[in-house]
Each structure stands twice: as C-alpha cells, then as structure tokens.
Length: 95
Image 1 (cartoon, rainbow, N blue to C red):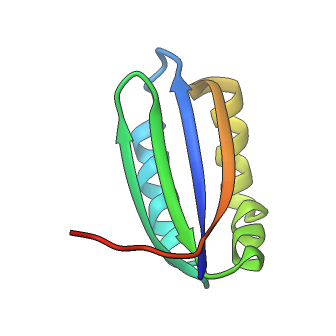
Image 2: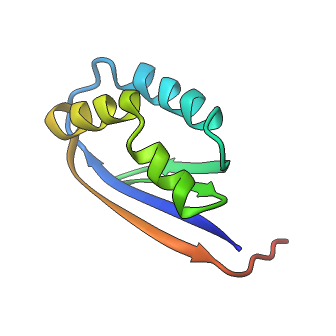
Image 3: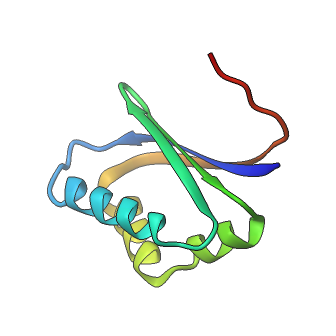
C-alpha cells in the first residue's frame, strides 16, 4: 500500500519561470524521504500524479518551504485553477 497525490490544473497564458520551477520541484520531490515516483501529462488540463510511501511524507512535502513558495507562485501566476486529491493505492498491475 502507498499513496498517490493527484494534481490537476488549468494553466494561465503566463510561461515565464514555469519550466524552471517545474524542474526544480521535481528534483526537490525526488530528494524527499518517502517519494516513490511521478507521472505527468498536459493537454487542456495538466495531470501530475506523485507517489509516496506515507501520509506523513506527503505532509512534509506539502509544507516544504521551497514547495510552499512555488505553490504561491502557482496560485498567483501560472494556474487558473487546480485541485489536489490524495488516494490510497491498495493494488496495482500493469501490462
């Protein structure tokens, strides 16, 4: 069992600084204890799913100071809206 944080978003037209922060957030997340991986796609909406070994790890990521700053920039500059969902993954399979 592990957890998925599902982040869906609609972007504004503003691109300045977004790609650099996205790379920085990925590098920072990978360094966080409990981080297990990430998948992402963007068309009309963006969907990023990050995987974590515990709710505690998710909470620590959510309150990371650098991540908090990026979240604020997202709300004021890069996103029209977003939603975060946290789900428990009880089973997985793949082809």
